[in-house]
Image (cartoon, rainbow, N blue to C red):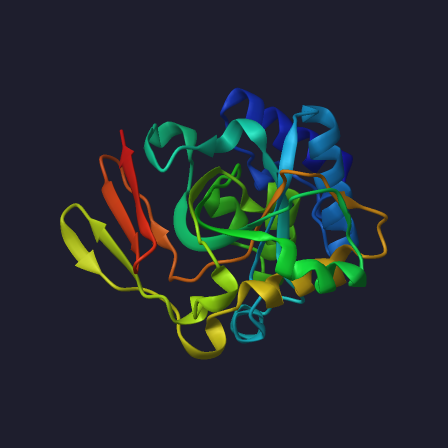
Length: 259
């Protein structure tokens, strides 16, 4: 997995795309373990400051629909965090989708193990946006099965792009956060793409899924780190010159301009 991880790191630094047609079959991840090997090479090559993790595809219904064998995690680079009222260059977010999420923030260092589930009442919760991206030539990725595409996504920084942290949700434990309505106004047209039912994952479940994925890895959340908890909305494919306003019912707005 050295070639894949190294090429993805180079693509991140030099704003280029990786053509998977140039890879041999044995250079494509076929298991979660191989995907994490490529991902770890990616991080080692870049050596950037991280401020937490993101986890996607937590819902079992979504995993079943997509043919995945688990969630899709990735780290958050400090340099990718943006303000809630921001402008993003379209060229900086190739093959990008916007996903509305919640994010936990950790008030001290925590070991990632089952005991962390009992500390959830001590965590802060924020509205957030995950702008996913891709370092792959999309046509070269789409020839693979959905499961292999997921492994490629893990290898590629969990499809990481930009992160926006919105407002803190005060007394979030007393708010029915899984029923909060989320609306997007895209170029002045209103849409309501929020998930309901089994596709709408409570952030507490996302935290547990993250712990289950990594509790044997001797890892920690550092004080001030975030965990993005997965999409609450149908992902929106971002286009050039989009003007986007995301409203979390009674919790505030996040504004994004794409140039």
